[in-house]
Amino acid sequence: MLLRIILFAVIGLGSAGFGIVGWVGLHSTVPAAEAAAAPPAPKTRTVLVAARQLIPGSLLKPEDITTDEIDVATPTPGAWSDTPAARSELVGAMIRRSLGPKEVVMPADVMRPGDHGFLAAVLGAGERAVSVGVDAVSGTAGLIWPGDHVDLILTQQIDDPTAPRGRRIAGETVLHSVRVIAIDQQLVHGGANSIAENLSNRTVTLEVSPSEAERVSVATRLGKLSLVVVAADQASADQASAAAGNIPPKTETITWGGDVSPALRQGAGGEGQTIRVFQGSNEGKEFRF
Image (cartoon, rainbow, N blue to C red; front, side, top):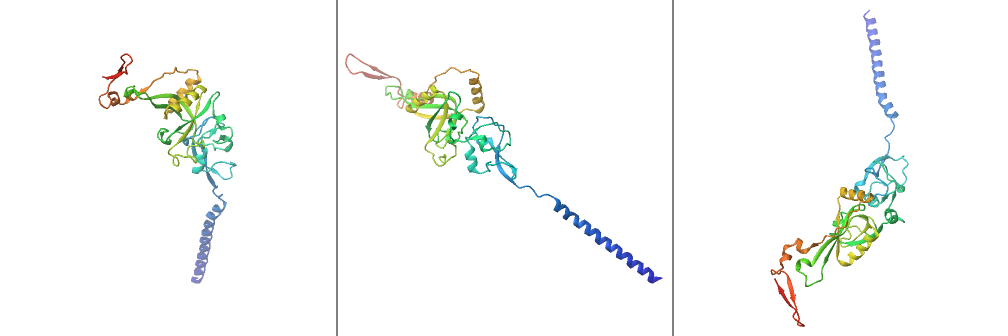
């Protein structure tokens, strides 16, 4: 009897052992099967895309470009990878069609500076392209980008020794809120002639009317030219006003040296106005007050 009980106990323990081994084996193979069935993570690459809605005819600025991850299997032939060279190549390029946020920028979507017909495509109807030379300081130290609007200021010295000291230097705005369409010979800000490599001279190309082009041509012979950036909202308001045909009347204002420096109004030695008096054929005499 005792032997029979021991036999049944051994058989029961063996069955339980086989059950445990089977259960462990079953559950250990499930994760492996699931892992084998899971698809591999898709390979992606970083490309340059539109940071916001872009309209045709606009010139790309650094803030217009951002990055996104796309599947390498996605057909995007020619899409720019995110490199400093690619960003520099795109900045200043003209948008050919509307691009939505996060839309990949393709070669067919832009016309880059240096492409044949770039300037003709960028210019508005009846407009002209004129270039002016500025130095690193008067060109706002490289902070101007294609697409910005600027005022063009002329500073000149009046070669008249009889004029009061305060009236021998004058500054005036030659052009107001004109669009920058290119910078430097490569027509790209940050290109081979970037400000880091050439701090002495800059060439800025502006979009102007025929009459404004004549004013710029004369201004380049009179004195030093400087650029002043116009606020984006003001530039947009000016464009909307011009599109509506509301052209403000030209106001010719001059800032004299004496308006800026009271010392020039007084002169180095308390000099005031000078009057030259002529008596007959004798040489005139100067009287200072």
